[in-house]
Image (cartoon, rainbow, N blue to C red):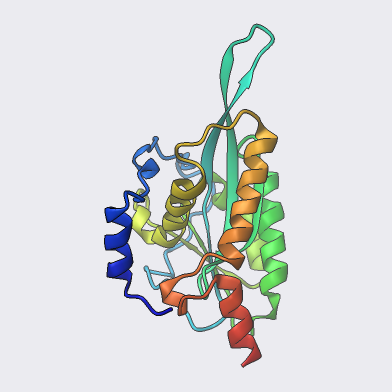
Length: 223
């Protein structure tokens, strides 16, 4: 049923269904540790849109908190780290890694998976990120070079240079994280995995003609 989105918004407000959990924000995790390796130039320059599948990929790391109870019955804050790789063509999360601590191994595993998935691109690919320590390390830089992939980095301290990924983290935390309490690593990890599946396969986007990223990909590739 075609309905104007402004009418939907008015109905949501009238019925008191407006989401409010997003107001619970915490300090953003920063992976920047200074210049610890090679810093690549910004080749994307906020040109996030592309009509070529698998040609522009962006990535970042985000931190999530959960709680565990120790032997003395005390509540201890623990952390989980998510490293997703997104195709800027349809905003689909094509690979990701989840770990208990910032991990080069975790990022490299997700990187290699995304390189394999995007290897069908007929044009030279560009992988974009911020200047986090993991994206400067020799293994990451060398792997991109070996696969003839351009490396691009945001300018230092400029979140707008990777706003698409920042927006994904914001939406994700509003919809499945803020307002919820997780009491184990496994519980939080499973919830994140389910959300990414939902985001890819079911969550519609106006920019994609009210289709989900996977639905948009299948429709255009079948045309």
